Amino acid sequence: MLTNAIEVMSYIKASAGRSNLGVIFESKNHPRHDGSTIYLPKITSSTTQEEMIEMMASTDHEVAHDRYSDFEILKEKKIDVTKSVVGYVWNFIEDSRVNYIEAKEYAGFRDLWEQSTPQLLDKIRVASKSDESLITKLVAGLIRWDSAVSGDMFPLCAAAGFRFSENKKITKTLKTFDKKLIACQNEVEKVKGSAMTYELAREIVIALGGNPDEETPKPKSPTEENEESKETEGKKSKERKEGKEESSKKIKEGEGEEKEEEEDWCIKEVEIKESDLDKLVTRHELDKTKMSKVGLMYSVGKENSSWAITPIDNFVVVNYSNNKLDSGNTYNTTELLNTRSSSANFFEASYHERIIPSLLASENFAQQIRKELQIRFRVRYEYGIKKGKLDVARLARIVTKAPGYSERVFKKKIDATDLNAAISVLIDMSGSMSGDKALYAAGSAILVNKVCQVLGVAVEIAGFTDIINTDIEKHVPLHYLYKPFNTAMVREEELLRYIGASSTHMIGNPDGENILYAYYRLMKRKEKKKLLIVMSDGQPAASGSGRGLGGFTSKVIAEIEKLKRVDIYGLGLMSNDVTRYYKNHSVVSNVAEIPIKLLELIERKLFV
Image (tube, rainbow, N blue to C red):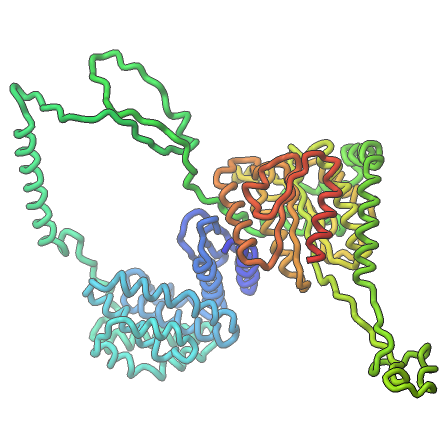
């Protein structure tokens, strides 16, 4: 699921870091490891949860190879695993060895491998079902053998492995090497372990009647293997051709003129993409060709494109409270940390001049919320009870010796219901927010910060836009942390200064990716109740090509709403676009109403 995407990328980065390996997410789906970098397909809006689990498992597997495998043995023995039978068998046994070692050391890998590999084995089995070649039989035999030996560590993989067809001769031969495979799986030293698997691979090839020094025979070409089926197809093709000629004769009239079939007038609807509209031109036919009776009516359909999630390392995160870039330090954005620039000063001056005078109603409302919540969650006592802590003020009752009265001299503390909540406020800081929208958003953030500080509610206030990476000609999410969860307190003047500094760079608004990042941070909190409020004044739009971003954002929000781990709410600022994306939403038609609307929302959600 997309809500796990950032967590998955963080996991992959951390796992690869165990061997100082880099990670690159690329467009092609060809996972590989070149010795210094692991290459994985980009996570997009079409990536499934199963595929993400497979990516994590594959990363752990490649890291295990880097830690425990000695690939120099292939160069030393001049083995090409794509051509040599012994090379292929060695690669299989070495995979089994490093997987077993990694699973013993790290239970997380074992769980991931068990979740992803059984489905992969089933796909291989189904795809090779009709293939009776020797290499396919060998693959099936090796999988069944490894399933038996490694079944204690990977029981689900073993169950899938045993579904492969059995060749009794291969099974009997491989079974004699059980103890040697187990010995390999318990050898963690790189050079020694890989040498053991190489020798075992040679012994297996010899035992199966092969020559370990011989290259794999070239597979037959499709022509050689399917000669009979090709001849059959040729006959069918000839028959179809003859049939067409016969049909052609039947529809001819006179000197080769075809008989025009009767056709009704009709309109056919054709769905096209927006990007195709500019390719359509109206052309006048000046020849004497008859006009068709079929008209085409075009409607604009959805683009069939997937939005690729930006790798977590490429996110530009400006943490103002720490005065540093938390990530994305390869981009020249250090100027954003300058909270005393002329633009930031202008923003602050405008706030004091134009916004503060109109925030009186909002300030009063914030005070009401604070008082109401404090009263509601104030510690209280129950008095005049028979058990509890002795109440000195009621000791005189003891001397009355009145049944049912004199023994009621105790009190009991009634703990207030803890709010136990964490709130994340995410503000759209794109170009369209310039002016009063950004100023009132700043006022809202300041008021929310005040209320949450008094109540002791964990709060994070952030903004978002993007930046163009000219190297790849693609946007990169830019996330402003004005008040992070892990910063206990940010003063009003500091918060205003931070938002003012970020107002110097307001471009696009890739909502989906920034919502994912805010959600990822919020999910790390231990509070029972989690609320994510997104304030936006328009639909998602990246600085570069935003194709697929709207659908991606919808999918992200829908997943969060479905999981119900976080209560997500869209607050539209003078725009109804939030109604298209959020199930729970409201729209502010006047910027001066933003603070009160936001505070009302938080009050309502905290009291639920």
